[in-house]
Image 1 (cartoon, rainbow, N blue to C red):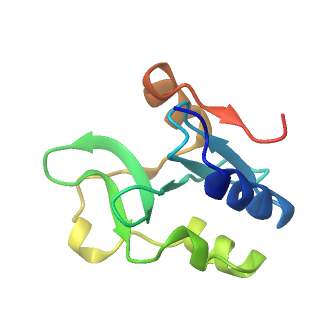
Image 2 (image 1 turned 45 degrees about the vertical axis):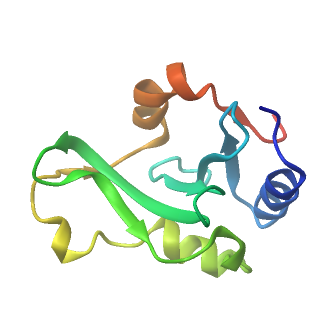
Image 3 (image 1 turned 180 degrees about the vertical axis):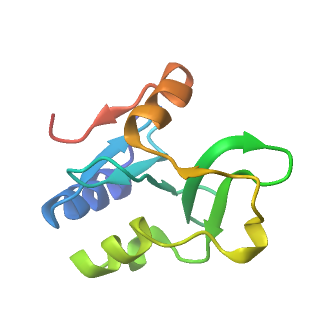
Length: 121
């Protein structure tokens, strides 16, 4: 499935704010990071749109992250994106996780199935 115009335009906008954006081959989801590549903010434009924070290691107790109740298009400023990228995991996530996911970790785990492309690369 090709990247939709909505996702492509939005990704270009986020990149223009100074962030790196990776889009999956399906064209409907991906992730945002910054030049440090120390954190991953996942996004999806399916099921009404969503953002998610990511951590590891995967566990039955805590999963792999948490959903942020905000549509991706609500990220308007650099500060909006930075705030969500560096958000702390909510207390309800428990203590089964040990670290926030880096770009290298995310790609090592999901790139084989998602086939990410970095926007503007």
